Image 1: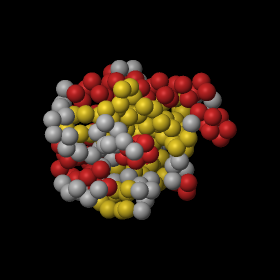
Image 2 (image 1 turned 90 degrees about the horizontal axis):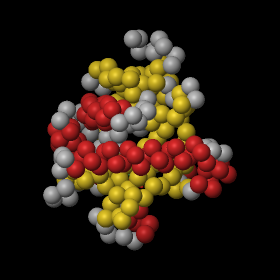
Image 3 (image 1 turned 30 degrees about the vertical axis):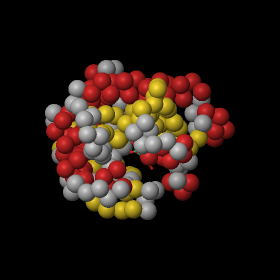
Image 4 (image 1 turned 135 degrees about the vertical axis):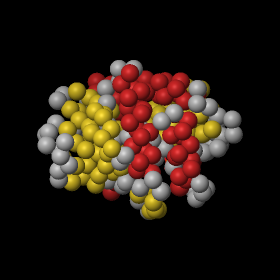
Length: 234
Ligand code: UDP
């Protein structure tokens, strides 16, 4: 497998072409950003840890018949994936109020939601990824109602799978963000599942073991990411 031209560079990952046009290589960086790129830094070994965590979760989801872009982990920092045409919608699922939801509704962080909340954000850096609803999606023409149903239902299924898995690791899945794309007409889960894109709290102490340690300058960021890797058993 040849690492070809760099085709995309995001905040936390680079995407390279390979010798197979249907596949791409995702390379995980140590760079971290928050607040729409206003806060920048690096988290030691984050790329290695997140590649391991994301690879693990993609394999877990695959075992529950959730279709993802993941093919295999190539090395410490890289995974091979199916090339996607990304749907510009970020799907957020929440089980406990935190972050922007707590702020928007004036709720205390940690308030348990009676049922999972699904939110949609329009993936547009220049606009700061605004919160949108189904009719915005229709007006923007970025997904049909049927396709949006698939995204939302898949996101809720993933929530159930991850929550059940994490409860056995004494972790709470507070919320997380997913991105999807199409590959040969099929909708696949893309991007990553990691402490960059999820909020994980220790179920006993509510200690934050995710990117909020970086966002809020709580310290021990790398140790928190390592702890997630350790708890999932990788
Ligand atoms: N999230 C993400 N990328 C984003 C925005 C949010 O991965 O660009 C994740 C975030 O880590 C959290 C969930 O989505 O697990 C909900 O984030 P929230 O809306 O509370 O925004 P934040 O407080 O992170 O600004």
